Amino acid sequence: MHRLKIISGHLSPAGSSEDRWDLRRTECGSAARSSSPEDVVVVHGLRTAIGKAKRGALKDTTPDELLSAVMAAVLRDVGLSPNKLGDVCVGNVLQPGAGALMARVAHFLSGFPDSVPVYTVNRQCSSGLQALFNIAGAIRSRSIDLGLACGVESMSLRSIGNPGDLSSRLMDNDKARDCIIPMGITSENVAERFGVSREKQDAFALSSQQKAARAQSSGLFDQEIVPVTTKLVDDEGKEHEVTVSKDDGIRAGTTLEGLRKLRPAFKPDGSTTAGNSSQVSDGAAAVLIGRRSAVEALGLPVLGVLRASAVVGVPPDVMGIGPAFAIPAALEQAGLTVADIDVFEINEAFASQAVYCVEKLGIPLEKVNPNGGAIALGHPLGCTGARQVVTLLNELRRRGRRAYGVVSMCIGTGMGAAAVFEYPGP
Image 1: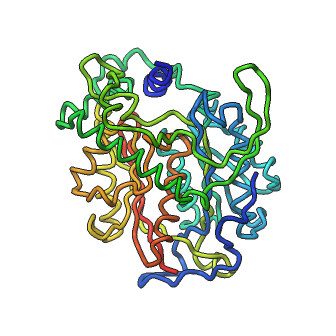
Image 2: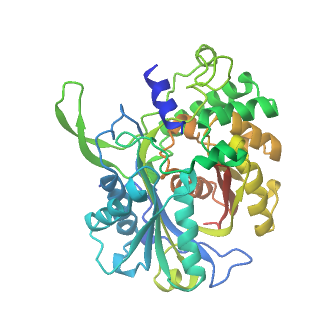
């Protein structure tokens, strides 16, 4: 019941780099056939472990500390001075003012100079990816050469509450009124309208847990996670110093039988449960991107190339279908098809909407979230988009050849976002 209450609240209106890739000794990847000096390329990205909100290892860690850990580590790994950055953009949802003050504090805690600017963006669940889009746009417009795109959320310390100051006229407009439908009910709407059964949802959730457990036990996440040394207050109120380097929401012992026993979380006859929904979580991620010509001039590696990006609108009452429309828009920009993509990182806000999008687009399940998704890992709102980029590019690199990947998610109030990345090869 505790977890159901947390999810209901969510869904209603400093460590060593020795174990990661030694990026300073890595040659820039071989360019793709269509490479250009003007390409927006990813140099490096890292994330914290993802902690369970209210109960996990990061529950007492403030978002500025989470953010500082990844900001500093990304630049440290590649040996880049922060004064080379043209801008920093941070995705955040729950902090006051989208975390503008928090982000600047994190900036200084990271040792960045006051001459480097920082700002925040809130496009709800896509905020971390939107931060990357914003920095990419500044690079394309030649305002900057290099920038840091980040995302952070502490759902332990902040919860979705008062929606703000809204006109009473929203009740007279169907679409405006739909914007305040609880997210869990939008999941039920998708399941009912598009015939996504409870059985399909639970099977998808089980697969997410199993894939994440395998990835964690195999050490696949180790090179993308920055260990965070922080304070943790136990049940007796005693404070302990801990180093957090493992996602703590993964439940390796999940079974289909166990999932089937869970009661619907949002309506008595519904199919959305605590087990087939994303977890509320704490975490941060950062991605260093730049213009290819500037990156190569500095001798930095190229981990990936941003080939396309798209944000689209969909009906608010079925907001979870967003990826089914954003992904085709991004693929069209890139001149690619679903068949050309090796890995799809689709945020698992709910199994209902993830299953719908995968089936609607005809994506083979083996290409979807090969290391698990938000049902198993968790969904720290502002962080998720940046985290997905980090996870995707590390997975493509492990495959050891030129490959394409997609990051996508649904967005509350009715939107979807997607990005297409190319890993150029070793």
